[in-house]
Structure formats: C-alpha cells, structure tokens
Amino acid sequence: MTFKDHHREGRIFTVRLLWAFGFVVLLALVLVARMVWLQSLQHDRYATLSNKNRMQTQAIAPPRGLIYDRRGVLLADNQPDFSLAIVPEMVADLDAMLAELGTYMALEQSDIDRFRRRLNSPRRPWEPVPLRARLTETEMARIAVSQHRLRGVRIDVEAIRNYSHGELFSHVLGYVNRISAEDIEAMTPEERANYSGTHYTGRIGVERFYERLLHGIAGFRKVETNAHGRILRVLEESPPQPGQDLRLHLDLKVQKAAWDALGDRRGAVVAIDPRDGGVLAFVSRPGFDPNLFVTGISHVDYAGYRDDHDQPLFNRALQGQYPPGSTVKPIIGLAGLAAGVTDWQRTIWDPGYYRIEGETRVFRDWRRWGHGHVDMNKAIMQSCDTYFYDMGYRLGIDRMAAFLRNFGLGDRTGVDLPSEARGILPSREWKRSVRNQGWFHGDTINASIGQGYMLTTPLQLALSTAILARQGDTVVPRVAQWVPPASPLDDTVLEQHDHWRRMTQSMVNVIHSSQGTARALGQNAQFHIAGKSGTAQVFSLANDQEYNAQEIAERLRDHALFVAFAPAEQPAIAVGVLVENGGGGGSAAGPVARAVMDAWLLNDDGELEIPPPALPETVPASLGGPLPAAAPQEP
Image 1: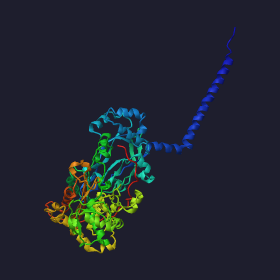
Image 2: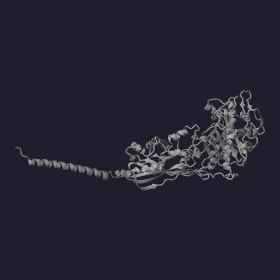
Image 3: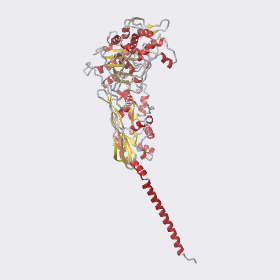
Image 4: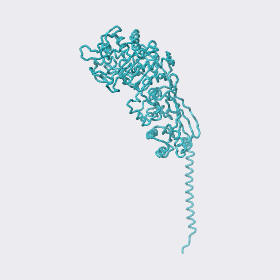
C-alpha cells in the first residue's frame, strides 16, 4: 500500500510556482523594457509618426482667373460644381465600392477609367480622387442618406470653368480639362507642387497659352484629422493667390457678327486692328461646346464631334491651310513695282490666256474672253490673272518669295495661341528640300496668282492685310491686350509711298468702282473699303476643261476668300475671310467681311464711330509661357 509523499509534492509545487513567478517577472521586465524603449528611446520617432497620421498638409487650389472681352464682357468664369470623390486610403475594397456607387447613380465606364488613371498618378496621401462631376440634386441626396455606409466617399464642391457663350469663342478661348498623368510627368517639381489640389489645366487656345497666368499659385493648410480622416481643426493656413484676370482684344459684337455672317457654312474669319495688332474676331465654324470638355466629355459626345464630316474640332482660322488665290495680288503687285519689272502706266493685252514665249502650255485667265488692255489698276480692280502671269514670270520666284515673306506669309505669325500652322511660301529651296524637284516657270506662274504650292492660314491673310493697311509696317497679332513693338519692312519698300497710296486706291476701286469685282459690297457703306476677292481651286482643271460648280460635288467646289481693310484713309480694321467651297470670293466671302467691318466701325445707330485702339498692357511677371505639350487626351 502506497502512501502520498506530501513533502515531495510540496517541493514540486514550490518549484513550479517559482518558475511561473519567474516567467511572469521576465515577461513584466520585457514589457517594461519595451515601454522604456518606446517611450524614452524612440519617443521622438513615434511622436513624429503619430503627428503625421493626425496632422495633414492639404493643398488649396487657387481660383482660376477670369477672361473678359475688350469691353469687359465676361467670356469665361468659374461656377460651383458638386462632384463625387473617394479617399482611397479609407476604402478597403475599391472595386466593391465602385460597384455599390453604381447603384446610386449612373457611372459610365469612362468615369471609372479616368478615376483609375488619376488614382495611379502621383498624388498626396489622403487626397480625394474625383470620380464624377456635375452631380444632380437627386444623386447628392442618395449619397447623403447612405453616407454612413460609404466610408471614404465624399461630395466636394469646387469651382469649374464655365464658357457662357458656348461655341461662339470655342476655338480661340479653348477649354480647360482634367490634369492627366502625362501632364504631371511633363511638369517640373515646382510646377507639380503648384498644381497640388488642382484638377484642371488649359488644354487649347487662350486657356493653354496663358495657363500659368490664369492658374495662380496654390495655397496650403495644415489640419488635424481623426481616425476617419475627418478634419477636426485647421492649425495653419497659407491662402492661394488667385489667377490673374485676362482682358482680350476680342469684341463680342464683332465676333458674333462674324459667326452669324458665316451661317451654317464651313469657314473662318479673323479681324485685326492694324493700329495695335489686336485680334477683334477669331472665328472657326463649325465650333463645339467647350463646357462638355471641362469635367470630361462622354464617349458619345466625343464620337459625335470626331466623326462629324465638317470637323468641328478643327481650328480652321489657326491651322487650316488654303491657297490664298487672288487675295495676294496687291502684295505681288507691290513686289513687281518695288523690283521695277512693272509700273502703273505699263499696259498689256489680255486675250484670256498667257503663254511663255517658246512654250506651248497655256495659262488661262478666269475670264475666258480676257480683259483687253490692262494696267496695274485694272488688274487689281478686275483681278486679271494674265497681267500677274506676265509680271510674275518677269519678277521670278526668288524676288516674289522674299517680298511676300515681309507680309507674314510662309511662317508663324507669333500670335499668342498654341499650335499655329506655318503655311507654305514656295521657293526653289523649299521645293528642292520637300519634293526633291527643281523649280519650273509654271510654278512661278501659279504662285503669281496665289495658287500652286502656296498655302496660307486665314490668320495670315488677315495679318498680311493689316500690314498692307499699315503701308508696310509689320505688326504681331495679339489676342490678349499686351502688344510688342512693331518693326518696319525694308526701307527701299517704304520709301515709295506713292505705290502704297495707289495700291490702296486700286483696292478701293474693287469695292466702290462700277467695274470692281466686289462692287456690290460698297452699297450704302458709311466708309471706304479697300478689299480684294479671291478664289482658290480645290482640284486642278485641264487646259481644255471648264469649271462648272453645278456639276461637281459641293466639297470639290472652289474656296471663297476675301481680304479688306477700312476705313481706307485711316484703317482701323483688317479682315481675312475664308468660306470653304463657297465659290466666288466677292459674292460668298465679301458680305461676311462687310458685316464684320460694320460691327466694329458703326455704333448702335448705324453711324460711323471708330473705336480707339486698346492701351498696351505690361506682360505679367508670372507669365512664363505655355505648359509643355502633353500627349493627346482620351475623351
């Protein structure tokens, strides 16, 4: 029979108790050591990390500068817009959240795609990423009712761009659009910091060229937040500097007159004040609604613009390149006078065609039966091709191109708009480098009437007309009201003042003479107009082929052009008009130019009242030029 050894069991219990006590003491010592290490040795580090979680620095987007016309009419302003945004750090499952939000409102795939691109672009932690803009009251109410289930989802109010006149100024003002990852990558670190909290940037037109001026300087604030990211208080704040307002040379009355005069036709109108280079009207028709692009245009709307055969997104006034036709004849006439290959008394016989001696090719005049005896004045007034064939042949392409270059042809004008086309001023060197061919006499003949390889933009047409009005003084066209100094042409041209005076009178005869090609435009005019019509062929005709507009497709018909300045004695406006496939310049484009000049020079009572030129403004110090070009954006 075995008896319990109480003494031995007591010893075992005591040992076990001591081991347990020692283990507890050891754990306590480890815990105390850990607390000492955290609280004392690592205090500064973890205090900083705690403050970073509790304290946040948030960027404050500056209000974008407003845009006015020359009379103070507001063209682009900022209006409040309610948008839905998500703080990604507060959402456990983004895909599930996006799916749930789709039950509260209509979310297109393009909205989700843009959200993911913005999510992957560089941004500050806890910064909301916009998902959809222009929320309706019903959508905001649904989100507000379910806010307790939508952690990390918030409704923000922000100022977005609004273009009150819609498509009227679309091609010249342009529009702002969401900043893309490509935009951010193209920015310098300083620019990236300045665009923190900003969702929009100028994309085309004035909005892009003057982006730095209109954007302003971002502000910052230091805030304390709770665990849910809600702001408890503002600790420190540096307010943003609003973008600077911009006043343009554009005049709403003149712009609308040009738009209405074009009607439903495709074309472009540019009007310049030759006294200071201010662009009074800049129209490309058809246009587009820039408000659709601000918060992101839908695929349906973008496809409608993209697939439109009339190309409403194409800026014809700035990027369209067309043969100038007879509109350059006054300049080429001055080139012949300056070179001494003709004079005002020289007369030729025009049988309706021109043939270079020793060659068989015939160059037809627009009037099949010819103009008879023609001098310079009659050649301008009745637009005689044969006279300019003969003069251009003797002048030669070298002297012709050199003289035309003084009038802004074949190069960018320097206008304060991005993406300007250069045009083509043909020469021996140009043809050799571009086409790897030699220059022929026929090329010179075609260039003498603004055909062949020569291409100009409507802006260049208006500028060359303004230089004509200034009797050779160059001027840089400007949309915004700051003007660099003008520089003169070659002194040998300026010294012959009589040539300028007589050429102006010949252009006046185009409008006000009973034999002028655009005499219908001079009826009931309150001022004298100096103008020149032009017609540009869309396709070439054979020598024995006759042009008949009624027998060809509308888009193959000739382009109609017209240039003019007024009043002829003291020019205050120069106009260049293009009507695509419009036919005759005098009949199709001329009335558009007349409507634009009347809108600028006549008051509300229909009386002549010439507005004064705008006062030059100093270029702001913050203007550093346009942002670097970004890749084309998806809708």
